[in-house]
Image: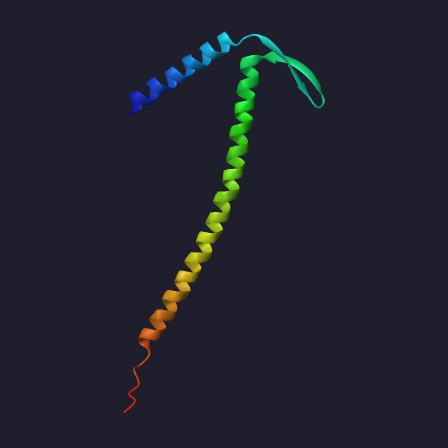
Length: 96
Protein backbone atom coordinates (compact mmCIF):
# COMPACT_ATOMS: atom_id res chain seq x y z
CA UNK A 1 0.00 0.00 0.00
CA UNK A 2 2.84 2.33 0.83
CA UNK A 3 4.52 1.61 -2.50
CA UNK A 4 1.27 2.32 -4.33
CA UNK A 5 1.02 5.70 -2.59
CA UNK A 6 4.62 6.51 -3.51
CA UNK A 7 4.02 5.58 -7.16
CA UNK A 8 0.87 7.74 -7.22
CA UNK A 9 2.80 10.65 -5.68
CA UNK A 10 5.58 10.34 -8.28
CA UNK A 11 3.03 10.25 -11.12
CA UNK A 12 1.34 13.40 -9.77
CA UNK A 13 4.71 15.17 -9.51
CA UNK A 14 5.63 14.19 -13.07
CA UNK A 15 2.27 15.36 -14.38
CA UNK A 16 2.71 18.65 -12.53
CA UNK A 17 6.17 19.18 -14.00
CA UNK A 18 4.99 18.39 -17.52
CA UNK A 19 2.02 20.73 -17.03
CA UNK A 20 4.34 23.54 -15.93
CA UNK A 21 6.68 22.97 -18.89
CA UNK A 22 3.84 22.92 -21.44
CA UNK A 23 2.24 26.07 -19.98
CA UNK A 24 5.33 28.17 -19.33
CA UNK A 25 4.15 31.12 -21.45
CA UNK A 26 3.70 34.38 -19.60
CA UNK A 27 0.21 35.84 -19.37
CA UNK A 28 -0.87 39.27 -18.23
CA UNK A 29 -2.98 39.06 -15.08
CA UNK A 30 -5.24 42.06 -14.42
CA UNK A 31 -6.64 42.49 -10.92
CA UNK A 32 -8.18 45.38 -8.99
CA UNK A 33 -4.93 46.91 -7.73
CA UNK A 34 -2.76 46.51 -10.82
CA UNK A 35 -1.41 44.06 -13.33
CA UNK A 36 1.35 41.49 -13.35
CA UNK A 37 2.85 39.02 -15.75
CA UNK A 38 3.05 35.39 -14.58
CA UNK A 39 3.43 31.94 -16.05
CA UNK A 40 0.11 30.42 -17.08
CA UNK A 41 0.75 27.28 -15.05
CA UNK A 42 1.39 29.37 -11.93
CA UNK A 43 -1.85 31.32 -12.43
CA UNK A 44 -3.80 28.07 -12.76
CA UNK A 45 -2.16 26.55 -9.67
CA UNK A 46 -2.86 29.69 -7.63
CA UNK A 47 -6.52 29.73 -8.75
CA UNK A 48 -6.82 26.04 -7.84
CA UNK A 49 -5.23 26.63 -4.43
CA UNK A 50 -7.59 29.53 -3.70
CA UNK A 51 -10.54 27.28 -4.63
CA UNK A 52 -9.30 24.52 -2.33
CA UNK A 53 -8.82 26.94 0.56
CA UNK A 54 -12.30 28.43 0.10
CA UNK A 55 -13.79 24.93 -0.07
CA UNK A 56 -12.05 23.95 3.18
CA UNK A 57 -13.26 27.10 4.95
CA UNK A 58 -16.87 26.53 3.88
CA UNK A 59 -16.63 22.87 4.88
CA UNK A 60 -15.24 23.80 8.30
CA UNK A 61 -18.25 26.01 9.02
CA UNK A 62 -20.59 23.18 8.08
CA UNK A 63 -18.64 20.65 10.13
CA UNK A 64 -18.60 22.92 13.19
CA UNK A 65 -22.35 23.48 12.92
CA UNK A 66 -22.96 19.73 12.69
CA UNK A 67 -20.65 19.05 15.65
CA UNK A 68 -22.65 21.53 17.73
CA UNK A 69 -25.89 19.86 16.71
CA UNK A 70 -24.38 16.46 17.54
CA UNK A 71 -23.35 17.65 21.02
CA UNK A 72 -26.83 19.08 21.64
CA UNK A 73 -28.45 15.79 20.61
CA UNK A 74 -26.07 13.79 22.84
CA UNK A 75 -27.04 15.95 25.82
CA UNK A 76 -30.71 15.40 24.97
CA UNK A 77 -30.16 11.63 24.80
CA UNK A 78 -28.37 11.68 28.14
CA UNK A 79 -31.22 13.60 29.75
CA UNK A 80 -33.82 11.27 28.25
CA UNK A 81 -31.94 8.16 29.39
CA UNK A 82 -31.67 9.60 32.89
CA UNK A 83 -35.41 10.29 32.94
CA UNK A 84 -36.23 6.76 31.77
CA UNK A 85 -33.95 5.31 34.45
CA UNK A 86 -35.71 7.38 37.13
CA UNK A 87 -39.13 6.28 35.86
CA UNK A 88 -38.09 2.62 35.98
CA UNK A 89 -37.03 3.00 39.61
CA UNK A 90 -40.41 4.36 40.74
CA UNK A 91 -42.55 1.84 42.60
CA UNK A 92 -45.67 0.61 40.85
CA UNK A 93 -48.84 1.75 42.63
CA UNK A 94 -51.71 -0.65 42.91
CA UNK A 95 -55.14 0.85 42.24
CA UNK A 96 -57.13 -1.89 44.05
